[in-house]
Image (cartoon, rainbow, N blue to C red):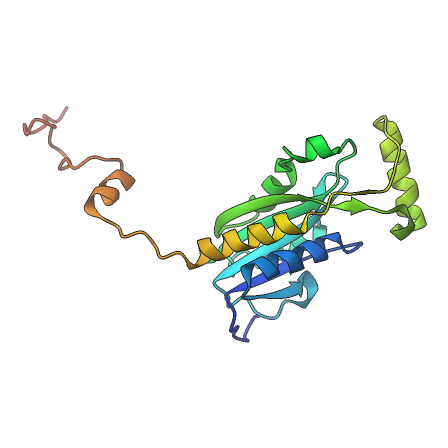
Length: 209
């Protein structure tokens, strides 16, 4: 149960294993400019205008802690505006491939758990440094890379500028005044028809059959 009130616009929630997703979360919050940051296990309030969810992707799957959080608080988030980002590093990443990376798979799994309004998503690239890995993770990754025809090497595709830019975009989306609902927009929303039910478009009453 969340009882405490927040005094900032946004909350950035993240999970992390080796620090990459935490770092991106801080950059995104920097871009928003009016945000709190919490590890997924330390969230004490959801009373924010915008909730940003950040998840690392391991073995092609989002964080189990983030997925469990979205399950547990699905109803609490149902009327919220949310944004989602992932941090991962595919085996075959190169500077050229990085330019067009979308990371759709992890994002789709996360957004599929959300009942609220997702205003934007973003897939960020992370990094790998062998010296930071546990012996078990290092061995596991070496095997996975080998089976896919690659060799595990240190790589860093972290992009502070991209994360800050996305954070600024989220701030603009979250603070943008809602567009006035005109009669024309309302008609389009319900299908564009202004006819009275039971009548034909030429004004003749429709015969019942």
